Length: 107
Image 1 (cartoon, rainbow, N blue to C red):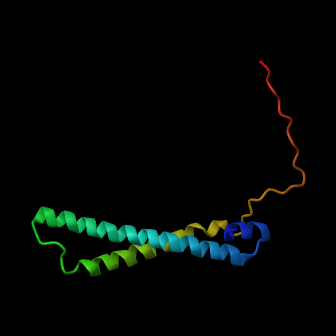
Image 2: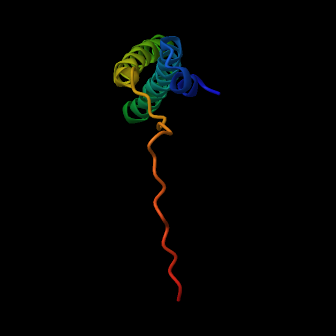
Image 3: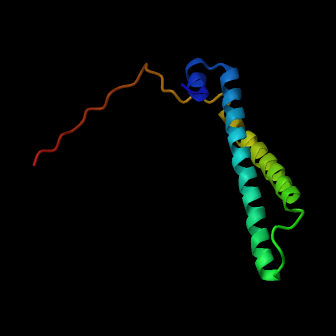
């Protein structure tokens, strides 16, 4: 059972905070890795266009900066976007639900 389901069942704030942290961490890792991949691919294309040696000596530092920058941006954005989930319980209440009769069509 994940933190979101535990939050839905109990309404405890620590579960929603753990869910938000986990979601932000996943987004940060994905955004950072995509930033580093973009940096490497741009470097490869630039070296082919400009006929220079590859890899340039500053590539690891540049990729690390992209990894940290895009990771931080993605994680912060994910944390901000999940704030509306706090206080939102989506499990339906069982009282007062009426079953609608189903109509069967015969041919």
